[in-house]
Image 1 (tube, rainbow, N blue to C red):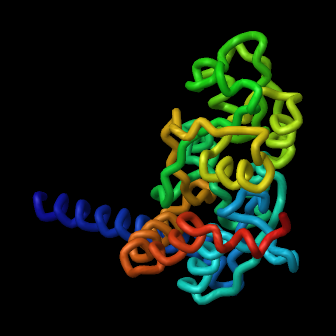
Image 2 (image 1 turned 135 degrees about the vertical axis):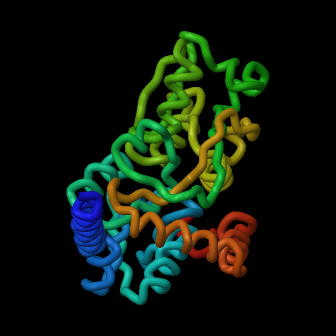
Length: 273
């Protein structure tokens, strides 16, 4: 009797193991990683108005930190890379509708976004800074000084700059724009008092557009890890991307492109002024 029960238990265990193995095989076959390798192409979504992470040069070609990062990922997969340029607020819906495989576009990993898509481990740490019209130089020393009903604040739709403006400056008037350059121009012209956005990008815009008409609050007032976005429910792709980033950060490539795009301004000569 005991022997019979043991045999039944062994059979059930074998059946369950076989089902689990079959499920693992099906999961692997349905992975985006498997599809990318099979198709020979990695599709990456970005918004090419975010220097020095992604932008177009004078010849109209995409360049920047994230562009090089994307090319390195495709190279590690042994496939070609295709970049899809679109407005930032459309990136997550486009990813979910299979317009591309990854988002590499200076996107901050937030819990709200993480409810919709999956993220890799962070690859750059960012924070929000503020570009302020020079007429406010004597009055604005901290971001809190902008939290007044008479202040006009701008940022870009769908970004963490917009979230930070609404969260930390709720008393101020707020207006959003599609592109960072449009928001910057509002402050430069005096139609707005301040532009809340990622500090690295503000430093570029202030230098290229702001001149003596604006100044920066350079102390970041938020903590924002930037990460690679992809669809949820794909452990194989998650594993590959995170292992790639670990290798990339420790074999000299990360340091090279970080120095090229974030510690140097030589790239500025490659784009229109």
